[in-house]
Image (cartoon, rainbow, N blue to C red; front, top):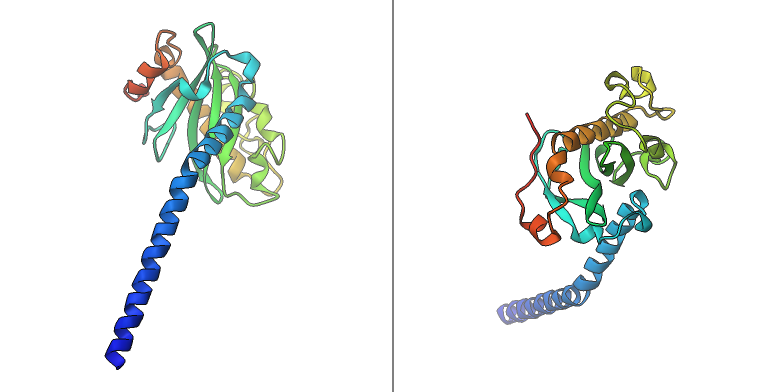
Length: 222
């Protein structure tokens, strides 16, 4: 009797596990397209904060180049896309993903918009784990600190001043939090250096979106 009970309970548990797996799989299949669409829309909203819709006439999410993983300037840990904003077929701005691995509470993911003339169109933090009320001020929803990068370039400020004020640079730090803004400043400057080293490829006007997807990853110079 005991053996029959154990067998019966085992079969019941197995059936329950199978039914649960089928339910989860079914839910995933039903929602994955909607989730993907929502993710795409959220990503586009972040890009449009840097390059407004009226500033380009192409689809940012469909005009991309692959960003190199492990490259020393961008420090990406996983594949990402470089987006290109065009007007009349000419690439005017590239939106480059970057990673600041040295944030106070962990890595900070951001995207840096760089115009054809080498100036920063804008910077947005996409993901972080910084302390609420302190380091999270790098998030545009928390403060306008990140707006200070707009219009900057490798020559503005001078290379030695691409630092927070505590390090004798020109960028503000936060009261009680220096590590986080320091990491974002450094990551933004590295991204500008990456774009400068690869500007011929990034701003090439003849690459179609389909060809861009098949193009090899852009590498930085020595």
